[in-house]
Length: 369
Image (cartoon, rainbow, N blue to C red; front, top):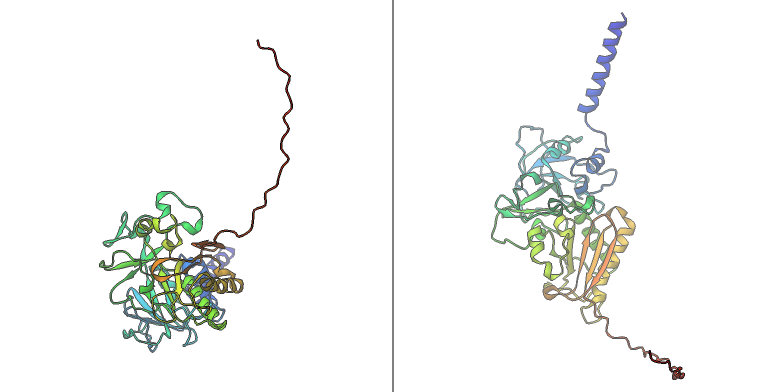
């Protein structure tokens, strides 16, 4: 009798365990997924009520779709799902319209409550009311310095040079093609904005891009607009850099272990006139350091409000084609620096202290030996 009770108890425990695994996750599943999965460092932080309502397959461009229960649709390399509110995207800004996941993480994302697979038409001009989920290529698919004919180079960890967790190899790469490069990844940015500037004629290209960077850039734009500075023309001067390209531009001031290689940094400027250069933001009639410092002020306010987006900000006062620009990243620790600021010579008069002439005392003459 006792033996049968033991068997029944074991069977009950096994059944409850399997039920907990198989049944849909609770309402906080997206937050757990964002923080706990392999792509956790790549996922944006969400408000408690941020949950996807519909998952849809797409050719890489988000579009408005109707939900379907057809689960036999194959999973392509990019998919889109309607944002939680039907109008807004994800992230703290509510303006991120892309999700970058590993193949195994797509299963977890698609299994969230209310998710169902449907087909979607490709429309590059569609209003960004849905999110595109990109399934990344694993870092392990990289062969030496190359991936599918595209030269990437070597990350610091591959050279045995890891300063911290933030400098470990990225999980994977987003494949960029001529067909999907115009995909909107947030309210103001498209995938092509972050492509490395080298190998212009090589397709497909590969990009490392983290969602928190998109979130932070959108929040900076929002903050500047709220403070009376038109930041709708914020442009990406340099987004992702392959380690190979980063090494090639080291002479131009690029850091050896630049955050641009990890997909969480961008050099930006604000072009209000469409001239391709930084604008006179403070209206003093010239484009100078005070203009680019206004971007830093916005970053400080954003980081104070959202500490999870803390990172580095560098100000570059004078630089070639675009004029002054700011570097913004989400490395996880605070860093600040300034380059190229002309300080001029000090006008202060250096006071000299007069000293009394030294009086030499006659020394006794020593006898020579």
